[in-house]
Image (tube, rainbow, N blue to C red; front, side, top):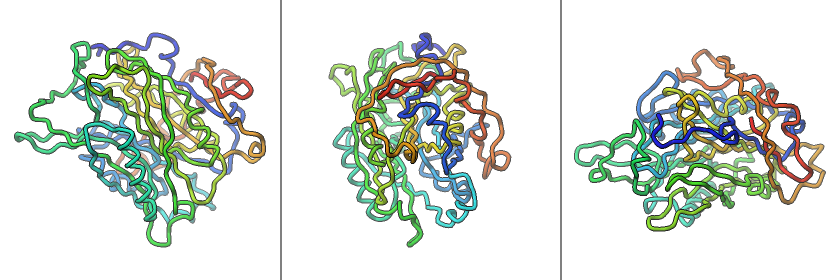
Amino acid sequence: MGCGLRKLEDPEDSSPGKIYSTLKRPQVETKTDTVYEYVLLDFSLEGSRPTVQYVSSLSELPQALQPYYTQGYLLAALHPIILSVGRTRSLPFSLLYRAILARPRPSKQTASMYHSVPVLRVEEWPLPGDSLTADTVRALIDRVNSSARGGVRFIGSVLQQVSGITNGRVHSPRRACRSPPRTPPETLPGDRELDDNTYSPDLRLLVFFHSWAPGCAPLDSLGCQYHQGALSMRVSRKGHVVSALEADWLELTAAYYRKGWSLVDSFVYWDTPKGEPVPRSLEGLFVYEERSTSPPANDTIVVEQWTVIEDSNVKTDYGPLLHTLAEFGWLLTCVLPTPIIRHDSDGNLATKHVVFLQRPVRGETAGQPRNQSVSSHSVSRAASSPDPPDTLALPAGGIGGFPVFGGGYPSSLSHMEEGGFEQDEGKAEVTCM
């Protein structure tokens, strides 16, 4: 399992994750009127496993997720678990995807909401060229806004390569990216052999929407507009491959959250154009949703989390923390996968995800001045990650035979040292989990 991927040796990288927040810990753990429930489902395009459901294409997700929609769960985010960037052959598990579904915890007040459950739609949009560019993404946002004017709501997108049958071979879709030449240190076990002479990829974007029957859409889902926001990261590389990244997540998003907008998608230009010097920073775009009902400003939590895969199963991820934060009304809206891939001390494959959650500003803080600029500092407090139990408020084995990752996890926050959410006045907080 070695093969050029360095182990997580320094303490900063070997911790399970970090949390950045606009709030101190006591405020993060304040109860709200809304409590969320999450279901995390893993899908594979290469065959089923005990904890993974097989789909031949992600365009099948609307049918696959329908049993959950009938119980009030809605797709909140979709992302590849392993992001293969800078490699001409796909990594193990590069056709593994995670769907996160959320619903408000059922109550007498929410029971009447389920009659207006939306329909999940997926559209396949072909893209010009062999990688994303800023102009391409802006054109995509314009197209999303055009669709939204027709009464649908944008959920997110997944970029894939879809290829046809060439020389009698059917090529599987995989995460799309333009790849620089591969060098022998970059060889990884389990890579699929791809013959460049027969492989003809077609870059497409799978775009997910919610739509409603006429007259059934909630008022805040009509007339949504989508805006772009800057996304920039400082990166370290080994050759062409990104090995570490750093970003001022709260500073990048603060102005948009203060407007009451929601972060719903992200695009990063991970690839280095051929012949150009390898940059020390990467750019991209966040996509924000503006609702017509002028919602209150949002507080936010950003989690940098290592996901560890043991054998073919997800061993450690952001799930326990997500279920803990759900009890305090925190809603996940976006997950940014990264191409950072290493091995842990046990030889398991590990990759880093960035998870974005939001919650309306509480009444007691809404009238207080909000920081106009937010900067982060490191607290570096260690805490153990709880093992997830097998309990979930769903039928055994999930719904419709799907394996489920989720449920009533013990509080991840309680495992942090007291003061783990402390922050300086005017500064955002970050703590190692």
